[in-house]
Structure formats: C-alpha cells, structure tokens
Image 1 (cartoon, rainbow, N blue to C red):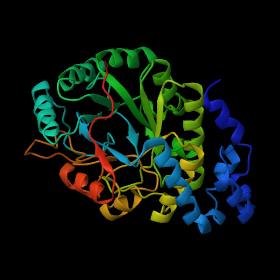
Image 2 (cartoon, one colour; image 1 turned 120 degrees about the horizontal axis):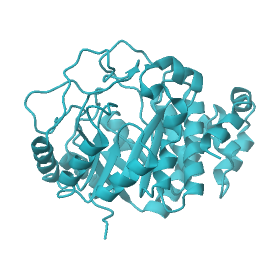
Image 3 (cartoon, rainbow, N blue to C red; image 1 turned 45 degrees about the vertical axis):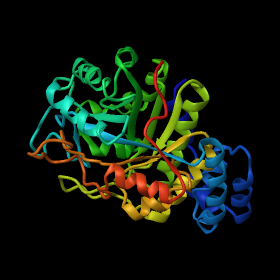
Length: 367
C-alpha cells in the first residue's frame, strides 16, 4: 500500500459538503483533543474554524513549545542549475521560457559554499531544475562532496529519484529531502504539467516514500498553494505527512507551506490564498501533527513571517536567492520565482532574538 491508495479512498468523499456542515462545537472539540482524526483536521480547515483562530493559535503555541522549544532553525537554498526538461505552466524554469540557463562548476560550488558558510549557516538546501542529462545524480553527488566540507546538514530539492539513488546520495552526505507534489488534485496536476517526466503524477507522489525507504533522515513535503483550493491541498498535504510519519518512525517528517509567487511566464494562480488562510492552514497542521516541523520560506513578506514566529513555524530560510550561483555571481540569471523577504542571515537572527526565540544554525550532525 502507498499513499496513493489512501488518496484514492478520499476521492469519494465530498470535502466541500463536509466543510459546509462543520459546527462551532466540532471545531472546539477538535482544538481540545489530544490526538486528531483525519476529519478533525479537516474540521480545522473549515470556514467555521476561521472564527476560532485565536484558540487554535494558543493550542498551536503550546504544542510547538512542547515538542520544539523556543527555537527557529535557519537554512538557505543554493541553486546548482536551472536546466529543466519539463513544461510546467507555473514555473520560471519551464523549458519553453527563454531564460539564461546555467550550471555551477565545482569551483563555483566551492565559492558559493564559502560565502554561505561565512554567515554561520550550517544547514543548506541544494536545488536543480529537472534535467537528468544536465544534472545527473553523479553531478549532484560531486556537489555534495564539495559542500560536505562546509555544512553539517545537506538537503536536496531535485527531480524524483529511485530509492537506490537516494541511498547513493545519503552515502555521499545528504540527510534531507524536500519535494513538493505541487498539487494533489490529479486532474489539475495533469493540466499544468504539459510535457516532461514530471507529468508522471504517481512517480512524484511516491518519491518521499522512496526516500524514507532509503533511510533519509528528514523528508519535507508540501503543495504549492494557489494551484487549487487551499483547504483541500492543505488537507492532503497533512494526510501525506501523517502517512509517512506513522509508517517511517526513524524519519523526521516536516511540511512546507509555499505560496505562489511571480515568476517568468504568464501563469496566474487559480485560487487566492490570503495571509489568514495561510495561518489557518499552519495552525491546523500543527494541531494535527504536533511533532512535524513546519517551514515558511522567503516567498512570504518579512512582516508576515515575523508574526508567525511563536505560532507553529519551526524553520525559516534566510539570505535567500533563487538564482543559480546567486550568492556570489556578479552576472545574475533569472530566478525560479521572486522572493518577498530579502533579509540577510544576520537580520533574521536578530528578529528571532527579539521575538524571544533562539536561532539555530546547526541542530544535527552525523557521527
């Protein structure tokens, strides 16, 4: 059995009708329960629950402090390449977009690593477009070997791999995977992924589980909010995370809440996702999965991110660029999308301190 089987079961459920029937009493019961069911979680994503965000926030803060303490883990993304063979309507790396394509040499990887490490960060997320010919596993592995001299935790956000390929990268020094399903609605997925290997919905959906089977230390999943109704997408993200956390006890499961941002191309998101919607999704996820990490990136505005500290978020990016070699290169390439919060690592560190929390640059190291 895979998560796809569970997802198929829920296709027969009228989620919209369920949400319309939620009562205040059901919301309050869900907020105060020790362990939420799937439908308790869905209840907290309803319009009715919107009136109870304050109570949800209080409970979310309690659970976050209990399981994580007053800390915010910091990391930054590093783009290795922007070559891509997919035609995804919402992405700046779309193969049809006329952008400058670039892949870092090992010398450039070393320079980027030195620059990022000088900020104190010891956690890094490396990214590529989806192009096996330009960025094969062997290239990613070579980059990891360079980066291992500077960072204690290296996560990847690359095209879906086979379990043995994840194992090969783990052996090289990778300990984390981030991979977004983009949208759990299979029909919409098919409509916005026009060409390329990414059109294979099931192969991408099963990638986090293949990483878990390969003994990846941490796996982070999410949906790109705005591609479909945020409530159903947050619901299926939570179900997916809970499935992985329950089945793979040795893997740390976390969830990201990326929201659509402007990029090269003409795609407009189907659904508007307000700040309040984002907060409700985050609080509901925390109450449903008290032990799961929650990441909010620099896609979001600085003020909004600051206000999330203490409400459930546990991990944030800082000093971010979505350009290949963007930390050191003078000649910039187009980024994958526009960021909203351009603050440096030092600026983010000070904000976290002012909120009464501790910024963490390194929380884990292989023996």
